[in-house]
Length: 148
Image (cartoon, rainbow, N blue to C red; front, side):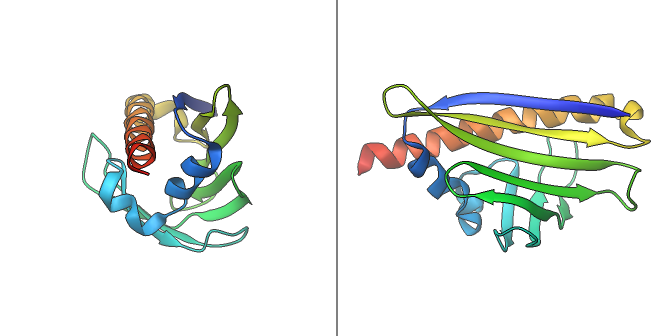
């Protein structure tokens, strides 16, 4: 079974300005309401350590593997719950240049596995968490741009 979640937001800043904040993992604790602790190697094959604070429960730490790291364009990682095929996710953050020095962020995840049909409520909460992260990213980047 599969399920996709995609969120989008426009940020009043260049892709480079957005990328700088998005890839500064140690500073996630300052602005990110969803992934409050982050670290690891941002390179294909690198392992991350991410602690999520979902709206519906206690903090969860996981160690996904970076699949794509294309500066100023895309960051994608994959992770799984327990064993492959049970509940796997491919998370993505894609930036594209918009009009007037803006950036369009596409942020989402593709879920696969036997548990997907039973996790509808959890996945709806995940979409809200992505939206909250997007809004916080926009606020952080636009505030930094206003002071520079």
